[in-house]
Image (cartoon, rainbow, N blue to C red; front, side):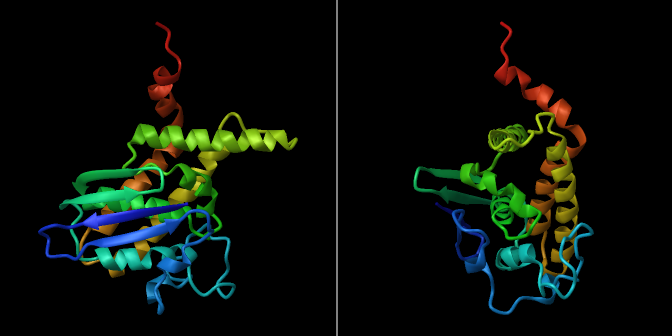
Length: 227
């Protein structure tokens, strides 16, 4: 299953860009550059919760996965409006929106498909990838994906986490990863599109960590109609 992102810049004096992510595979080796930059080395702004030790691997897997994208967008301002198409076998989604929103959506997909031991816990969400997701949509998909996993674990005689405790903990770990990646890419960014995109992605993760219960109460009427 491949998901292709096409960025059409129109009058921005920038060549159109496209990226294809195969979510049937683990990792994004086809997106990686031949000679990685120094900021992708593991010890450079290494995540405090990174399971790797320096010397075990030379470079951060997530940094390698997003390096080409970060480079391509390094000089672009996040607020510029462009046309973005997201193409799968089943459908095409298009939107005229700011660079940062499309980039946030793409980076979220690429990182969820990463071989990073922490980020790859988001892998199930790649199969139902929703471009340009709102906060409510992100919450619904996060919880649905998590509960589906608990169902299958329960079928295998493992106890399921129906209180979402581990989901909150996972997003705490994701926040630490997002913070470290945000620090990493500073040296590669001459403008703010990448930084704003990751900041928006960080905000979505923090909504699960800091206010999941209130977020769930906001969407409860979507599922339980008392009228």
